[in-house]
Amino acid sequence: MNNDSWTQRWNERYSNEAFAYGEEPNAYLKEQLEKLNPAVILFPAEGEGRNAVFAARLGWDVSAFDISNEGKKKALQLAEKNKVKIDYKVGELSSLNYNAEQFDVLALIYAHFPAAIKSGLHKELSTYLRKGGIVIFEAFSKNNLQYVAKNPKVGGPKEMDMLFSIDEIKSDFLDFEIIELEEKIIELNEGEFHNGTGSVIRFVGRKK
Image 1 (cartoon, rainbow, N blue to C red):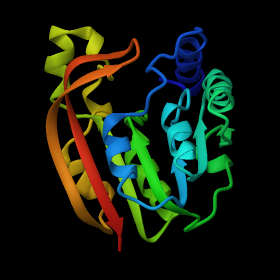
Image 2 (tube, one colour; image 1 turned 30 degrees about the horizontal axis):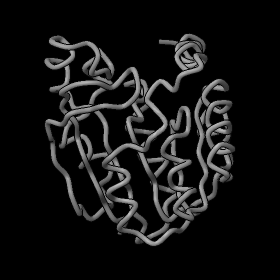
Image 3 (cartoon, rainbow, N blue to C red; image 1 turned 135 degrees about the vertical axis):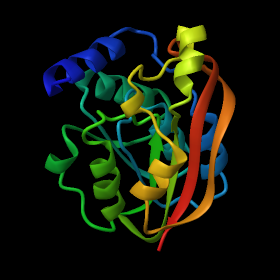
Image 4 (cartoon, rainbow, N blue to C red; image 1 turned 180 degrees about the horizontal axis):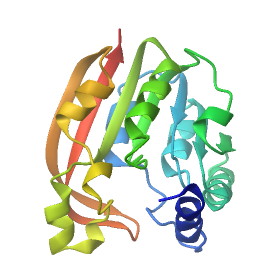
């Protein structure tokens, strides 16, 4: 899939008035963030901003990015509604000028990148995390395809190579101490596009 059609797809999804995945934060992210003291956090592929805005409400210094201008518009609208500020950039990661070890936490929540670049992006994103920094990750596992086949409303990519496995996460985040890494069947209730039983990978790691 080329970049233009990929960007267009997300702009279309985010151009409706309703929030595609709702306005509430992802449950796993919420659970993990509430264990930490607010610091500096990056949200890649942040879409309409529900997770970034939640972190800002907790007192985090929040940066976020996505390829979708429509996503940014909705995120800033949500931030204003919640009376918080987030730094939200639009573009490819390589053009955004983040600094090495700039962040204390990296939050990858359903950040499904095209198959050809996803492992490279994970490794690049890791360089922006300080030593001792935390990655919080939740996204669909390769086994989610069987759940989507039964119920398309659960959402997630239909391409096996865009989905994740435990081995892949271990490989992408080699220089991390694993705090938690599991594949889990969960019930999703996030806006219009994440509803029902799905299979996800959940990972919390600390950069060595």
